[in-house]
Image 1 (cartoon, one colour):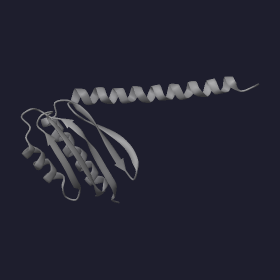
Image 2 (cartoon, one colour):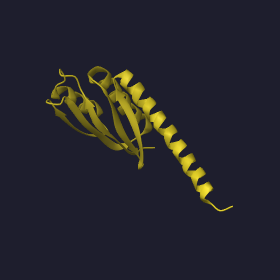
Image 3 (cartoon, helix red, strand yellow):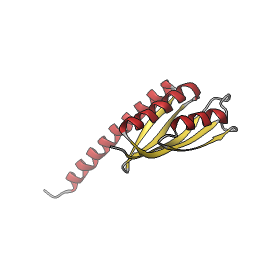
Image 4 (cartoon, one colour):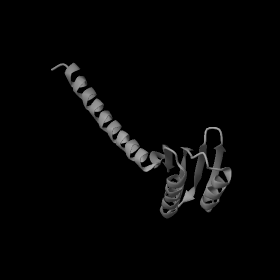
Length: 130
């Protein structure tokens, strides 16, 4: 069942990357998705937004295409925002070692949030009269 899907972010790209390379990427994603992109030759960055009513297979194809593209052109890792039915999540793409580190940072952040929530619960219990 198709859902409202959107993924967007900015990817640092290699200095040999050209606008024509972004055009080819956009054309490969354009059906059935809507693609907006911009390139900056000064900062060597590609900004891209892909959206539409896409099936799970089409969503997976978009993410795989972005992953393959980033394997060829990225000069660092990047975190893209992903929105499906209003549910926000993130996708790390780019250089493999950067993606691994970004994923590990996310795992640590989730652990820290859980510890802080537990800490707040304990402090609240301490403040309650017995």
